[in-house]
Picture 1: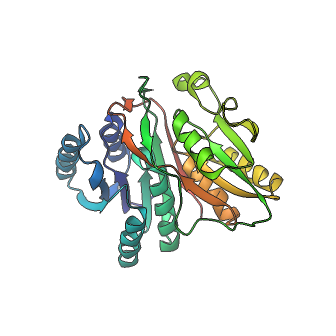
Picture 2: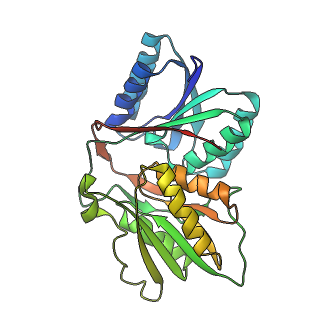
Picture 3: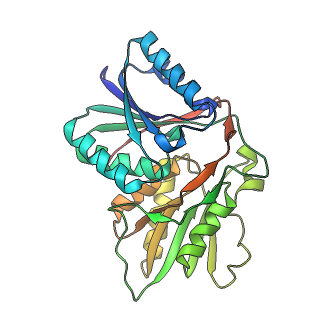
Amino acid sequence: MSNDITLFTVLGWEQRFLLGTNHILENYKIHNVYLICFTDYLHMNNMNENFIAIEELMKEKSIELKIIKLEYEDSISNWKKLDVFFKDIDFDQVLINITTFPRETIWTFLFFLRTNGACISYIYYKPDSYDKSEGGLTKNHKSPRLLFKHSGVFDIDKKLVIFIITGFDHNRTNVLIEHYEPSKVVYLSQKGEQFENMKRNCGLCPKTGFENILIDNVAIDSYNIDESCKILKELIENHRDYNIIITSQGPKTSAISTYLAYLNNNNIALAYVPAREFSGEYSFGIGNRYIVGNIKI
């Protein structure tokens, strides 16, 4: 990367927001930072403290901090704001810290950065652990929504299949299925034992209440973008007789592979299930490993 790197990151309440930002500034020559603030979630614990901390950090590093205000609940308004924003500014080298980005926002930024012609890199920080309380990571989910301008092409003569890259939110997965009532669901479940994955992942077996739906289970390593893209490409090819919706609920890196899958076949649709409530202790610490790569789109 050149010396003129622009960092995009989302203000978060998790410990890894500041820990990740510090790591980036120590290892990359960042020119300026755009901090996305979802104004309807500024009430979360630690948000104000983290905002003050990153302001002080930017002053200490003599890096310009610019704020982009969005609303998590209003995806159409966000799209319009970002459309104006990206028309006014050209970017050369961009680093997206996707760690605290909502998946819908990752897709939206990839769309605009692609049309902007920027050279895009991403970085993702795994936590040391996730919240294990009975309340779960998210709850009180809203109806699923298709990403604006990425809603696919639907043939009324075809049945519907949903590819779900699963995570730890069982209800979030079920809301998606109940809303769209597909004929088939393909659960793409994360490989490995990390974060008690085999115990907690919600895509390992069919769910009660979905007995009339065809269900397949596919193992995937969402941290490996190239491998994930190959699996998705094969699944899309094998389901040409279906209308296809893809959603990412596993590791945040799966939002990248799902977007690349869309670019390879824009007849498919990208869907997102918003949550009204998030655990205040969503994750703890920052892992020893982080995922970094370039996006060629």
